[in-house]
Length: 377
Image (cartoon, rainbow, N blue to C red; front, top):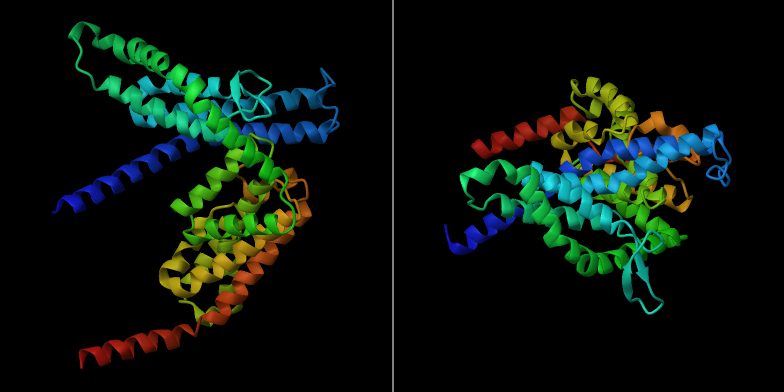
C-alpha cells in the first residue's frame, strides 16, 4: 500500500470515528430534547403561551419549567457524551462543564467584538457543544494515554484528568472557541428565524432530500442532528420538516406497493404493511428493502416526495417541539393538520413517481434472466 493510500485510509477511519463520537452524543441528548420539547408544549397548551412563565405556581408554569430544564441540559449533555465517546469516563465531566460554560452567553458589541460571557449574551448553542465536546474528548484522551507512576493511576480518571482537562481548556473555550462559535450560532439563528418564502422552501427541500437520500445513513443523520440542535434555540420548523420528510419514504413506497403490487416481488407486500407502521413511527429505515432491490428508481422517488414535504412544511411555518415520535407527537405541532397534510402529500408524490418509474416485476425479472443468458452465450 502506498503512502497516499495509507493516508487516505487513515483519514477515512478518523472521519468515521468522529461521526460515531458525534452520534453517541446525539443518542444521549435525544431523551433530554424529548422531555424538554414535550413538557414545554404541554405547558403552553395548559397555560397561556405568552404569560405561562409569569404565572408562577400554575400547572402551565410547572410543566414549562420542566421543559426549559430539559432543553437547557440537552446542550451540555451533547458535549459531555461526545467527549465521553472519545476519552471514556475521564472526558465526561470536562465535556459537560466546558459546554455549560460556553452556553452562558457572549457579550457581543455592535461592532461584533466579544467582550466576555454572561447569561444575557449570544450563546454558542449546539454548535458550541459539538466543537467543545470534540476538543475536550481529545485533550482528555491525550492525558489518559500518558505514562504515570503506578501510585497515581487510580486518581487519573476521577481527579487528575478531569481537572487538568478543564484547567487547560477553560480559557481556550472562553476566549478562543466561544467568541466565533457564538457569533456563528447567532447568525444561523437569525437567518433561520427570518426565513420567508423561497428561502424556507429551499431549506425545507434540502433537509427533506437529505432525510430520504440514505434512509438513516450519514446524510440523514446530519439533517436530523442539525434540526434537533435548533430545538434548544426555540426554532422548531426544521424539526417538523425533518420529521415529515423522514416519515414519507416508507409510507410512500408502501402505498405504491398497494396500488401496483404487480410491480414488486410478492414478499414485499408484507414489507409494505410494516412500512406504514414504520413510516408513521418516524423510522425512515422502513424504506431500505425497496431501495436495496431497485435503488435507481426508488431513491429518486423518495427524495422527491420528502423534498416536497419538507419544503411545504417550512414554507407554511409548521413547527415540532419533540425530536421523535412520528404520528404520536403530531398534537405537539403548532399546526397538526398541516403537519399531517404534508406527510400525505409527500407520500402520494413518492408513491406516484415510484409507480410510474417501475416496470412490472415479472418483466424486470425476465429481462434480467435474458440478459444473463445472453452473457453466458
